[in-house]
Length: 245
Image 1 (cartoon, rainbow, N blue to C red):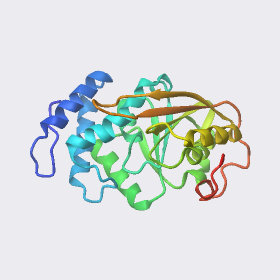
Image 2 (cartoon, rainbow, N blue to C red):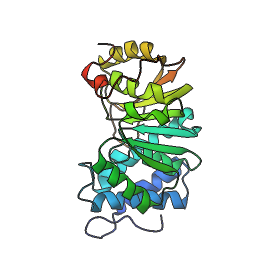
Image 3 (cartoon, rainbow, N blue to C red):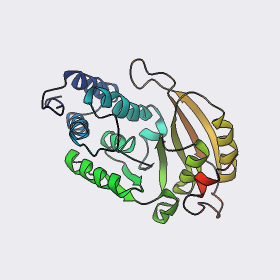
């Protein structure tokens, strides 16, 4: 990486720089992509209004960047042409995946305007041209229906809720990739919700996005049939009355 990552005080963060270089090798990222990810870390470190508590480059490179890029270990993600990141928040995993997958169009779906403003700034500062911010609730994004190869979700909600957000946005044959921690009883509710939505569990992949990471899993659900017309339910109902309970 030619330009060192800067912390709030302006000093190079060599630990973050080394971690980015290792990620570039692991995922075959080019020099420009490495610089873009470095810029993302710099913006996070310097933006007091960044919607995340993890902002220092030495932590953010693992917690945000590496944890996002680990989805590239799934062929479905590597080959995707359209991705929607629901509940994008500070931009992860969608922004990092957009940097890595230059031929993929990525929608960062976020309902809070303050977060949308931050995402717009982040895309501009890092010069990420293949991603856009969709400032609306996932349930209300009608233009996104049946349009995506992959939907990604990281730390958004219980799995039945995420499935209900994702299913209407996926084309048949597309998949949801849901970031989860340790295995839990929530998965049973997820399976029941999936059956109502035209989805089925394809895999649960244990991943190690960075050294020492524990209890990191990617849950992959495949859309196998049309989602019933009653979905999505009106805004807020997925959380208020989750499927599969």
